[in-house]
Image (cartoon, rainbow, N blue to C red; front, side, top):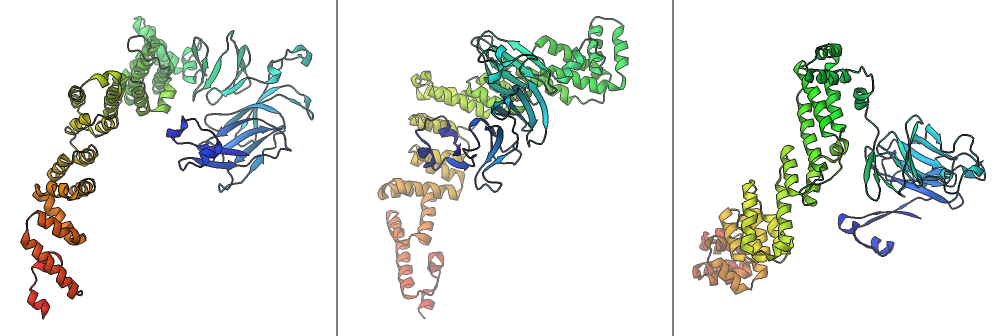
Length: 551
């Protein structure tokens, strides 16, 4: 039986004892999938197709079963239930992987079965709907027999099979990596040490014991510029800038050769700068694009400016030099997929708040969440525990207000959760949003300040919320003493009692020593008992001619 388990963030990192304990949690979703019959064969491998990229639009499990491939879907999900055989009987398949865009599937066939004998082991690339085969790459060398191969070689299949972007596949064997391109071409990389492959959206990260490498297919824009003898417009523009810096006449000759393709050449140079890790080469490519901009006003400056900002961000987060180095090997494509907002959040979680603020500023993103995260980290740090509440409050307020931040509610709530009630109350004094300030004041036990703030806001609903909370938390004498010193609060509570709680009305009026109001309330209560059909409650009852009611 096959199950899909969806965990919330709070439970995803927590250990669990059994599937039964997960299923009993109301926050966890457990779904049953169809599964092939045991008579079909053993399950050799599987991969998950996310609903965003799957063919059916549902969560799918692609499995190598027996000699074929099966796709399992959720039972009762509105689509085809159970497990569907795709009629790909060229296995058994030891590894299977789905491309990042969900359009292609790579599967490695060991080629050893009773039906097929000892066929050559091969990597097969097919469409996600299994309608066509695109590539078949045999890993056994030409003329090599089974007796010539050692145990644990390519015939047993790779230890890992991952996609390198959307158009190439990388296989990891014992001592080498084999990268297979879209037309069956391959490149082999030898490694003495053990490595691990981590697929990314645009390549593969190769993790060794003492190093990290990134393998990716060279983009077409870079091939056009750097290919020897290239006459592409972008290559001519790049050479023109080099000749211009060298003060040679060939700069004008190359620029004229570009001709009407100058906008395309500028765009290619800008794009290539994004894929280049070398800062010096980035500058040369951007200078070439800027040189082309002088002679072409058709190309908008937005793309050039956006790339300059992106390169500044990427170069800073890649830099690992002390004391403030980050060393995050992020590519331009990954940066686009991640978005600047997510990068800012990750930098803040890594406690690189200064860099997170700079990235937010460069991309014109608000840095309020970064500074609030900084304040929470400061409160929770060991040095923060040693600081006094007044000193801590002054440091946080000075920092946030210096950056134009006036919201302190979430920081005060965090301080209260850390059992620093006095610090929370001091931070709430600087909160400008009363709707956020009052509930937290009530939470930390500052009843009087909460009521005063609610009255100052002029929001009747907020005053009622504060009064009802105080009424539940305090004894009746304490509550009456609290509201009697505040005419606005007592007036609103009396109005509420007249309409919804007449039993408490007399007690409230008596504590306020309003004897005439008590008499009116008693009279209205008596008349309501004897004249149930008359509407005489509230203010209308006091202004009514009682003699007319009797008559």
